[in-house]
Amino acid sequence: MEEKEVKFELEVVNDKERGVLKLGDYEKSLKVADEILAKNPVFVIEDDESKKLAKDTRARFNKVAEQVNRVRIDSVDEFTREFTIQCKEIADKFKARANEFGEVIKPYEEAQKVVAGESVLKPKVITCVVKFYDEKILKKLADFCTKNGCELSVK
Image 1 (cartoon, rainbow, N blue to C red):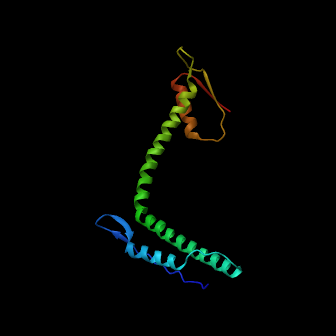
Image 2 (cartoon, rainbow, N blue to C red):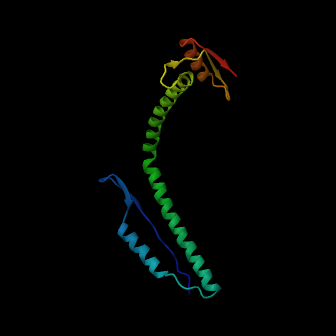
Image 3 (spheres, rainbow, N blue to C red):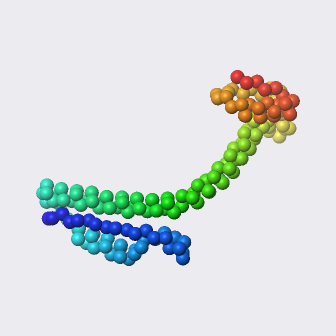
């Protein structure tokens, strides 16, 4: 059995009418792929030489598949890079504000203890065990304690 060459090219184009990326001539690319596969059928391994040919063919086909996937990934990245950056920037702004609310909600919830069926109790001292120093969070806790007439103890 002789080794057969695997040659395959893809052209990525921007279909401005539809606003999408596509292959330049998909039908032709599909036909070429089918022809290459038809010329390289799977066969029964009978000896070390046919085993080597099977492994080499498999490696070449895996390489072509990886290259096609790389073209797809690179094209999508290039086509969507600015859009992705813009969406991430806007999402990060909302996430940052959500985190700020979380920083306000958490101390309030920790300071409030609800007894089943009874009124809300306000503690006289809030004790915080600090694993890291974050001045912003400590200031918010201190402000909360000042507003609610309790003392902040930091350990």
